Length: 102
Image (tube, rainbow, N blue to C red; front, side, top):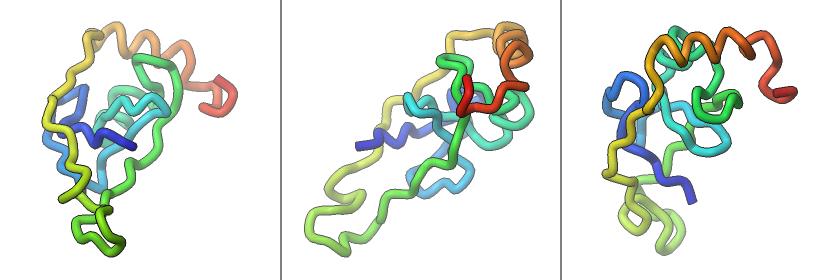
């Protein structure tokens, strides 16, 4: 089950569970849409993969026991350990390779 991290690992902006601008890679690294487009060039600085929109977990349990009330989002904030220059250099190396071929 996805953690639904509460923030962008790049700029630290809030990404609540219903955020439509939250993006994740296959390892669930979480960034906002602005960082994915403007800083990362759709390259995860941790794994080199691409990003997709993070699903929104339902607020209301339309099936018994399945909602934010039963599986709450994470409250642990995560920030990348990479510097902006490291991120840009890494993205420049692989951004022209389609994510499914990286």
